[in-house]
Image (cartoon, rainbow, N blue to C red; front, side, top):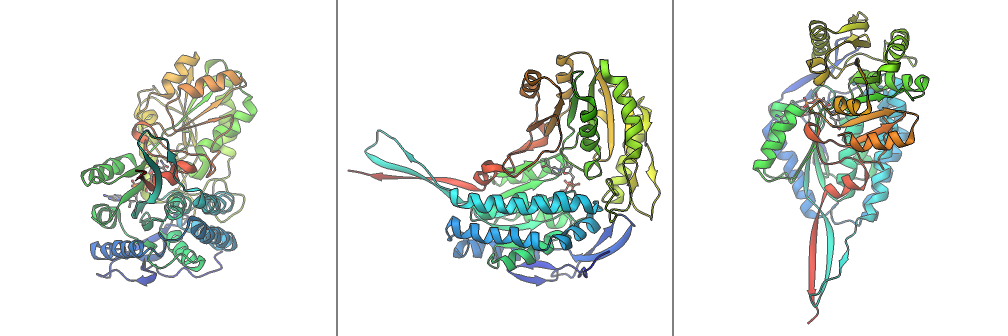
Length: 484
Ligand code: NAD
């Protein structure tokens, strides 16, 4: 049960809480019951303008951008500490808002969000340039400077972590930020606004505007005061966002959809592989851009693995996200549940055989769907090719390494991929050929702020995490000093 009150959300602009100028508000739903949890302000163009102006003025005044990296790092370290000190509140909030199992929130969301800030706090004072050897009679050196105002637009599925993957490096580099969280799951962004202020981030450096994509997101995206758009979300919306930013010649980072293949070779440790296979498609109720919903299995072990999955998957604990034993909670919203239902119906029409699941779970009025395994689908079926974004696994056999790689690379996406094999040589060989921003060998979802991830093809471009992300929030300036 919640131990704290969830206050109606307001906009956080220039270090103060505001209602929307036109008084608009949106509902936030508890997906485990289908009931309204609270409401939050919906920012219109005037509110977005106020937020961007606050971010711009603060950036220009140098209260944050003018600090040394070490000073900014000290504040970001404090943010990480405060996340850990408030871990239980944050975990409960994220669980209520997204329907995530509380155990997952504690172990993954809160831990990783704190790690994000800690990691970039440490990197903040490594931001330096280089001296360049040149035949000019000059001293030439480069500096890394912040970009200015960053618009961070984040999706509904990992609200706290994906805000951290943008805010932590953007702040470490000295930028100011206007954050627009997803309309369905905005609560942890508002909680974090308070923690960032408490940690000593100056007013106006981080501004949070809640509201819908077409109104709030669009106003932010099109605001001329924005210097970079850091977007995580669907490929469809990403295409639009990149187009608008392209017209305005603003740099963008595009973290988009995924549909990862998980390859199990006959030389894999099957018992261990099964754990990774299940984790890869049920983690976060399948609402994970780097989920592994396409299982490709060597024909020699295909029937065996399907048999193991048919027995094991129905035993995965699905239910109330507040219970510590729950592994799979509800979908985060009704529209996501409907989308999963539509895809499973489509898979049936496309010739798929439901091995287990294939239906809703009727519980407390929540948006639950049973983990589902589907076999016998042709590779060109939509249920294989498109991103379902729910706890659904399709399973296909392959006869050779070449065929496995071809099937893995056959969708428009390229975010993540995974290989289960006992052969070191095969692991490296196949990883080399997979079109994906990250490849996991003999496990799944091994993520850490030190290790970059991101997409190729329709999964986007740019990288989150690692020094790569920090660099993407900076611009290089060269200074050439005549020695004549
Ligand atoms: P979405 O694209 O519907 O929304 C993402 C964000 O964009 C939200 O904040 C939304 O309000 C905003 N938005 C919508 N229309 C907009 C517009 N016209 N202008 C500006 N902003 C707008 O995505 P979603 O349903 O929230 O999230 C799920 C998707 O995100 C999946 O496709 C998933 O794969 C992807 N995702 C990718 C990553 C990654 O790292 N690559 C991580 C998580 C989720």
